[in-house]
Image 1 (cartoon, helix red, strand yellow):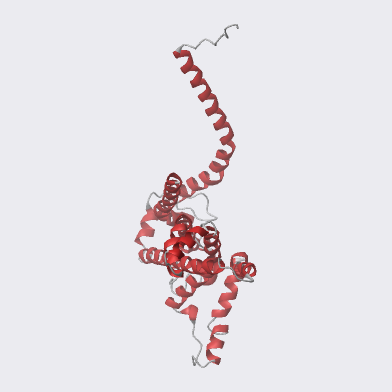
Image 2: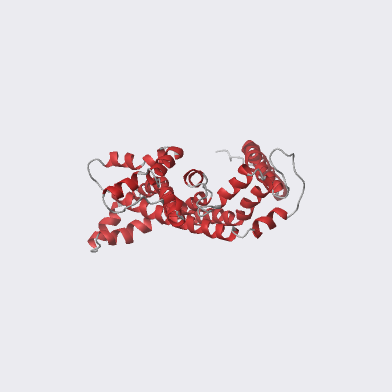
Length: 313
């Protein structure tokens, strides 16, 4: 049998050059594939972001040209505004309360819908309605219900003899902000419930059986099996929802418009009023830039959490 001829090994230097060439070609191909998406991101995200920062350093007003460079004057004006601190505290409290309530309601609803009973699929569809309906319609309906003169709630309370005269729910600061949080929770709980329900259905039934064998009741199984199983889902949902809630504009604008007496003025509303009502684009752009560090910390928190969870898996 003839001896098979083996390929002659390349010299070590030639091998390194060949590997470097392969890596370079793969890197070029990677950048070529990513380039279209990168251009879209730069055009649709990067440019508006940089332009907003630039405008925040000018006195630009709608209809009066590009404006002149004023340095930090807009930031000094916003930070010197007596109610700015109250607005930040109100935004934080509003966000924490709304996210907490949406989490609790979503968990309760997901736990109920995860049970095996007749009509479960129909109820799942019904509870998703707030998420499907247009925000404008939802806010108009709730404004009509809570109206101080012709609202349905006042009529019901009066007919039951619980109140003697109508209550101006949306004209009182604390009731206005409480009802604003209520509407926000009502609109947002389906996302939580749907996500938690999907997470619950990935938990192995064997874990519940083992907990039952160990003597755990319903509450015990929920605490020791369901909650740990939802830890990853809950972390991502709460962090993302915190960002969305803090930036929400539609519901506060349509429901209270910031009133009464600025009691429901959160920072997206302040931006709207400055930029699009008073046409002061420079000052309006400075407000979200001031809140940018808080939003950036939340975004980095989401990215870090997802990366850590992926590493642990």
